[in-house]
Image (cartoon, one colour):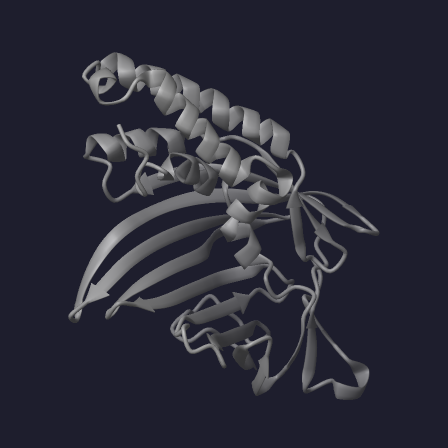
Length: 299
């Protein structure tokens, strides 16, 4: 029983399922129509539910093959606010995988579903910038405890696995992988991609309209606009939209491209986030897409 790339998703699926009021845009007086600052100005008890869809695909010879797909739902609540920032509560409420009929898919789905209802606390600074997972030790213990139970159950139901790899050896390798991924607060925080995406633009100052510039070997393109989201009757005229494109410059070995689209409620909560990463290699391309959409919103 080898720990290959897909089996390594045991920890990732658990973490993904665990994972991800006032004006957000404050205009500068002297530049009221051209510059906005993305500021988190949330209220205690603000609660939003989101759907998070992850798809990874491989493109080769104009053929697209989906290699990974999963969907989860979560609830985010502002638990407390201070002059230094916010404390928020993140709770997974549902999960789905595209390969749940296979034995491995069922294994990974069970790992992900075990996180439903688990509470993750995270903090932001006073502008709403995502900082870190604060109860990471509790989350780590929950992950490792469930891993042990799941491995025991799997080997009990499939005794033929002992001939492939001793259970103790497999447990050791899973533990090493887990420590590599979430063994510290910093490592665990990095796994919550959805939360990092949701609050990615808080703390930034952006100009309305189109902007292009180069910085840190990256080419940035932004298009900031205000108004209704096209094709969405529920959006309003005072919502803001951000489209950005990033790609490497001056690096001959990298052709990776990153595309992000954000649409915000007037009070600062993201209503929709889309992330697309394209990584070309050896005549192929790997595309990773994440879409986060609001389900409900309450105060």
